[in-house]
Image 1 (cartoon, one colour):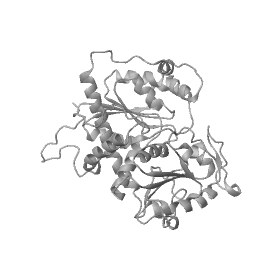
Image 2: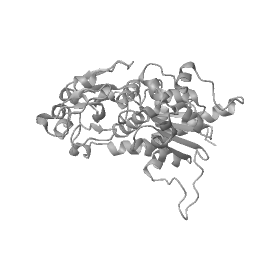
Image 3: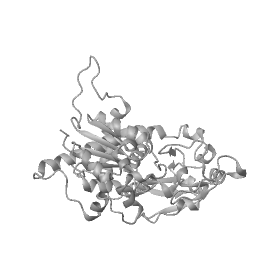
Length: 390
């Protein structure tokens, strides 16, 4: 049975940071601090030979589904380790060999697997709003592991935890997020969270990378001049260029041929980008003393960041990964704990809740207008490559 959720957290889902309060964000970060010894391996997840047994984890006898419809290394592995170290059983969903290939809808997939007994679904999906739609269709907890260029809440939370460790606070900071902002769910979640915690966020990149931000309700500060912004920065977060969404214009015909951009892509020149926005040691020296460097991964070494900086003393990239396990342990524990309280207080009801009209259309494969509906209702129709950022 999941442990009682501490006062201060009442949500059974974690779908994004836009709707969380500053108090809820701090509560989750404080909970993650307590799980860090498990994330670093200084406390065993299971009993070792000849040692006293480890008490059952807070998610003992619980089942977590990793429902990933995009490629992932860090996020899938991190959620898996987090759930296992809490004592849960973890089921790995493979979209490429699932009934999604037979035109089963995403919502039917989620509801059918929940009918086998689930406590949480961790979902990554290429369509904006997919985690919300799944949360409306099932009774168990749902955690967003990244949806399109919308949100990636646990990535932002692990970034905050790494910043708090290295800088000692999360209020009054200036954080530059540099690169492919237009297609970044990481940038959006960081903006939502850091602004609520009292820090300033500056999006930095060439003009085409700063377009398409009208979906963000929070005030957005942008700059095309990295050199001018760096002296104000306590932290610099570099983002990878999402090549799958861009057309590359390679100088002098060298390298691979230009690619047609995916929907929402823009053309840009790699060498121009490196000259203006690559984080080098010389550039980093312009930042505030003690400034840290973050990157959600995967890194395109030699493009947005040099090896010297990525592996240098100001880099906290690997510490971010460690913080990710602790943050996801906290998120799973808190959300499933809230689910347990709901289950105890609820009257007997059918396994599956009634669906809203919009969710019904997704569940029945309604061919409405808009990319989100098409993607959710017919996964097997194919998409471009993943835009996963972590």
